[in-house]
Image (cartoon, rainbow, N blue to C red; front, side):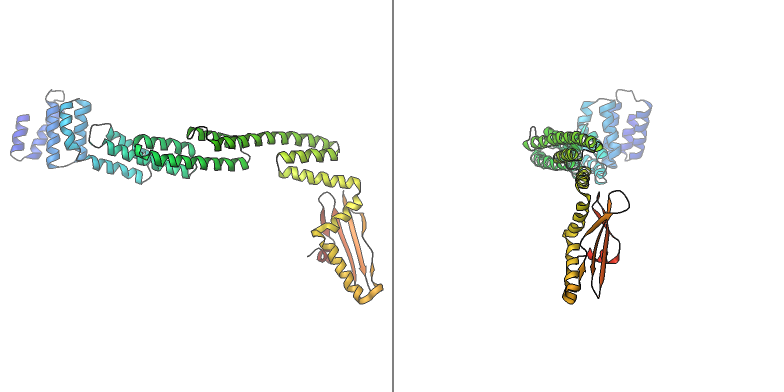
Length: 365
């Protein structure tokens, strides 16, 4: 059969020759001559069809199935003509964002003898570098560091550029850790700082950041304990001691809830001391004294018209409905115009509610 195939080929009957060869290979796969016949098919396909995929199947059969090193070595110069096409085809996956498939495909071709191993390593390294850059931009620092290492492993000429990127990434990681620290995610921040040691061992910036983070952790814990102690004092109506403890807590860890408690304790102490004076103070200090200024301007305007016929009542503070609520009144009367100002004062919140239109206008700067 093999003789008939060669005769057909010599007569230019290429398809007939290949048909006979295929019959031999499929019918007698274990004959010692089969590797030679596979190589012959390999040569014919190269000379007449340049079908890279067919050629590749025969090439890897010589290596994997028949383990014929002599014939596979003879096949390398031929298969080398098609490797660039295979590489370009696999790289298309990377262009579409499927980097893992691209790397897998490139390494597949690298597993077999050919003259493009350096090119394949270069392309794999470049793809890993791209993956590292994308991960770094997404702040996926764990993945980025791993991909950068792979990139250098396959493409050593990237080492200096990768080192620069890793230094930049360490700075970015520390900055991101600082953001986490500001968000009170202390453990996450410390883990990120420590990760930078795998990139730049014992770098000073990370060490300093870890010291700050651990100090914040201690302050948060101490502030929490002080806050709990303050709450107990507040429950026992020991507002002065509660205020002291809340202030100490706030020094350790500034939180809105602690500031609110400081504000409340201050107000409760003022209420205990002299609620009437406190109510007057709230009105007079409202808006940096805008009410007092507006009342004085109104009184001055009317005094210029009516002289001694102008009357002012002075501040009158009296209880209102509701706990810790007072009313603040102030009257300005004259022969032509009268103003009766009245506000409800919430001593706990220092809130001021005007109870008529004149009072509302007096609050406007």
